[in-house]
Image 1 (tube, rainbow, N blue to C red):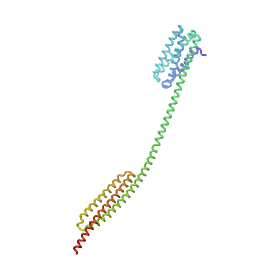
Image 2 (cartoon, helix red, strand yellow):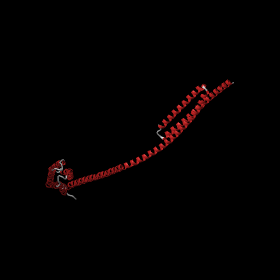
Image 3 (cartoon, one colour):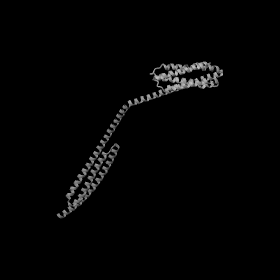
Image 4 (cartoon, rainbow, N blue to C red):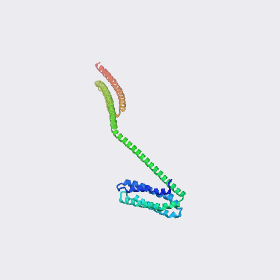
Length: 336
């Protein structure tokens, strides 16, 4: 079991080791100085805290040790002040090295005083039970600090592991983005080719459909023109007969001619409107629908005009017959 003597004499060992390493560093070893100083600061704070929490309360129970306790507290206060000053001193300067050396002298003097004055007084004044309480307090405090350090170290390792995993995920995401960026032009080129092919196919289909519709319309208009020409020839013949029949048929002929000219104009206007409608078509279904409507309208107009011409021709023929009959009758009478 650790004795009170061993406890007090062995406590400064770790701090002295850190002091030696820190003093041997150069001004350029900033990271090393920061690391060693952080460890030294923790070690000196631990020693001071253990004394103040577990040793000094027991020593205060003895009147003849109160002055030693006060001096030890002053030493701890001086040590903390120097640590604060070092904490704010740039680690790459000569000043830092000088302050570390000063702190080392103060600490070693404190250790010598403990061995010379404090330790003999403790051994003389404390009972075995009190010494055991102090030892247990020191060991429990060190164990608690050690567990806290281990937990902190584990947390740092876990944080570092999380950072690595996050970095790996970010790298994988970046690689995916890069791969997608490389693949995007090829995909876009393929999509453009497919779209161009689809558009070309659609244009070809539409062009064929429009050509077929145009041919059909042209054929239909040709048939209509032929029909109008036939009707015109027949009407001309009838008009010639009427002219030969005499001046009495001139009014009937004018009426029929006016009606015929009106039908011709209506036919031409319908054809022009139909061509404009076909030109405004923007899709194959619209073109087919418009073509069908024009075909029905032309058919209805052709039938209507045919009936009108037939009726007009019948009227002219009837009038001509009556005129010729009357004329024949007059001629017969004259001959008689």
